[in-house]
Image (cartoon, rainbow, N blue to C red; front, side, top):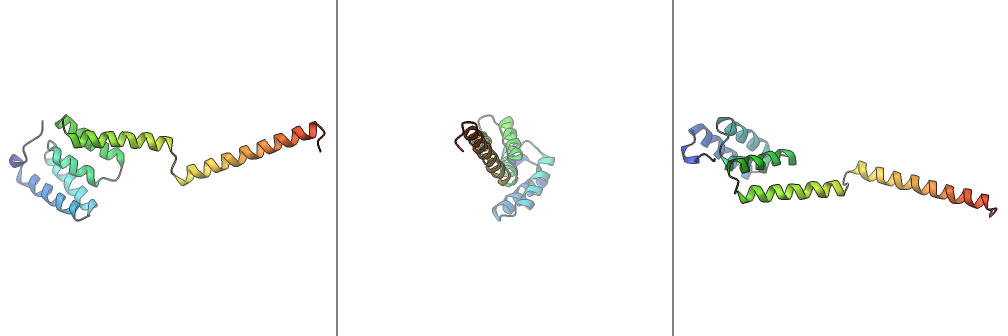
Amino acid sequence: MTSDLTNAPAEFRQLYKAGKQAAQAGDSARAHDLFRQAIEIDPYHEQVWLWLASVVEADEDRRVCFENVLELNPGNPTARRQLDHLDQKAVSDTLTPTTPQNTRQRRLLFAITAIILIAAVAVTALALGVF
């Protein structure tokens, strides 16, 4: 159950408002800090969790924020949509390696496979007396 923002403690409202202003100004680090402080005072406001999700860096942190929103309001369409998006992204990331290390590993594996194939052809050719 979501708490009513108008009945929230004054300190919470100040932190929430300052967090929104920092987020809108692009100061994610400050916004993150302010929203976390607000949540420590009262964690039952879905809007603060949504705003916090907009400034955290990791998808897992965003996921926790959206799950908390849905705990407070199971019908929140934004949280549901964002969790679905994170799920799709996780599947896509699993299927498509995007890191330079994975790309290097794939190239190395391809090169090793090519060398083994060439060696197998050469050995076969020698065994058949082609050379």
